[in-house]
Amino acid sequence: MTFEFTLARRALRGREKRDLFTVLTGTAGPYGAATVSVGTVSRRAELSCPALPEAWVDHPDTTRQGLIAVDERTRLVVGGRPASLTQNRRARSREDRALRITLDDRRYAYLATGTGAEELRDAARGPLVRIRIPLRGDRTVTVLPAADAVDVALALVLQGADMRALTLTRAALIGALSFLDTGKGEA
Image (tube, rainbow, N blue to C red; front, top):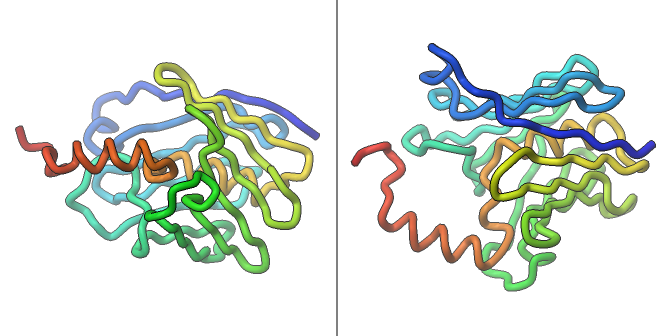
């Protein structure tokens, strides 16, 4: 069954502004209400949805702000099972720069497919979830028929991770800008 839904950025109030970087929320079709919360202090992005397996991604570097960094120290857990992450950041093509995820016997690739478009693919089942990320506005998530609850949970929790290294252009731009920004919120 194919379905589509929107992940909207929720406005933070009061204490949430101190504890959370961002919150994305939407109704994930038959799975119900889904929320991805990215913590500032905990440096963890967590998925909360009663019908989906628990999922979180975190990074031990507490000095950075923003989305969770993805590198060799990043930890990803879906349904209580840890996943291994690899990425060839020196590759030139989008397919070769994809984030490779191994979760038990499943082998995924999370890659940029175009401007503002990302996709979660399985090596055996093909495309599972497509995400459109406009410059301004809400993310549109399309879940394809081959996807199950684990696939949807994985795709949603990755929305709390920093995926700027998926394309060479974004990686070069962010690399140049990060030289000027310490990431510690100092002016």
